[in-house]
Structures are given as C-alpha cells and as structure tokens.
Image 1: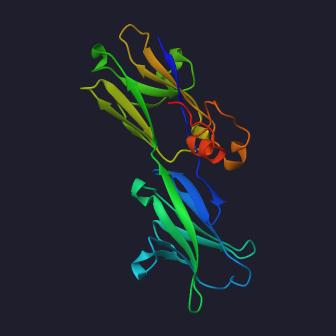
Image 2: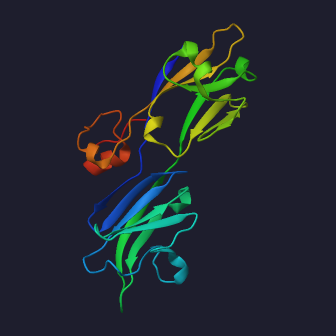
Image 3: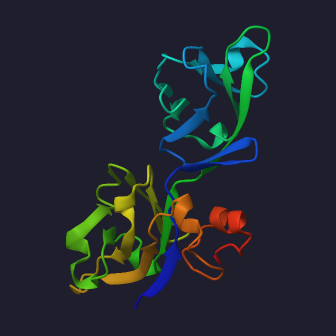
Length: 240
C-alpha cells in the first residue's frame, strides 16, 4: 500500500528586483552572487560584505581572493563580479552588499540571500518494523526498490544522502543535500519484510527544477510552482 506525496526542489537562482539582487540557494549547496558594475570600473577592486560594511571584518572576500567558503570571478567583458558562497548554512541568509572600491565613497549594490533547508523525506512505519531494514530508492517500481536503493539503514551515509531512524516516533528520514537537477524524479520509501515482499509505504515525487525564466510559464494551482516563484508572480503558494 503506498500513497503519493509531492515535494519541490529548486536550484539556486538570482534576479534583480529594483535595486536589490535576490539570490536563492539550498542548505549544503553553493550559490553564485552576481555583482554587476558600471563601465569604467573594470580594474577597480571589488568585494562582498555582510551587514552594513562599516568595519573591516564585515568584508568577506575581495576580488582575486579565494578561501574555503568564498571564491570570486570578475568577468570584465560582462562587467560582473561574481562571488560563489560554498557549503551554505541557514545562518548565511540575510543582507549582503556588493562593493566597488573608489575614492571618497565606494559603490554598493544590496544583495538579499535566501537559504532553503536541504530536502528531508519522512517515512513512517509500523511497530513491527522497528528492527527491520529501511531504504529509499529512485523510481516507482516497488518490486525492485531494495535492490536499487540509494541509501539503507545499514549504510546511513551515502554521498549526499543521509538516513536517520527515530524508532520512538517510528519515522525514518532521508536528507538530501546539495540538490542537483539529476535528483528530480520519483522515490519510494520501503521496509524489508521476511515474507519476501517488501512494504513500500510512500512514493515521493520530486518536481523538476525551476529557473526564473520558467516561472512565467506556470500558473496558480500548479503543484510544481515553488513558493518563491508564486510570490514573484503574485500567485498562491504551493499547497503543502
């Protein structure tokens, strides 16, 4: 017996609304922050800072600088200074500033970074399954699910997939970090049975990714319309 649930995954995107650059990313992944600048500033120093840029330690990275968390690229032809922020954490969300160093007063562009948590798939099971093998597989074929499992309770960490089992609540959870387009598709939660027929309890559909350009093609009520897209189009958010 299995039922269908819809979840949504979005890749990191960015766009400019008025004077603010809005950037969206997922916990555990990386995001690119584009900082456009005007003609004539190609050879000026650029930087990214957080908060109000009033003190030196607010500056996170400067042009030509790289570290484990931040890396930079300055495309002088496109006049865009890009900062890549790696290993996103929820506390990374907030207001940033793109800056260009110049005499007297620097030039700033505000950035708003929004972080979405990694996707978590919750799989409930019954009291008889507490000590049974649990697993998650891709596809929608229950008969071969265990053989094609991307992760099991015998191997709780497999690359970007991590499985935790709350035996008291009788729910095992699979967390997917650093989401990619290839993660889209159908998944099945399962519990191994001694009878030889595994109990597949839920099918999880991960909708295809949305980029900003596709938002204009969705409409109110579309199950795969992400809430940030709905907000941009003033549409109702996806029903949970």
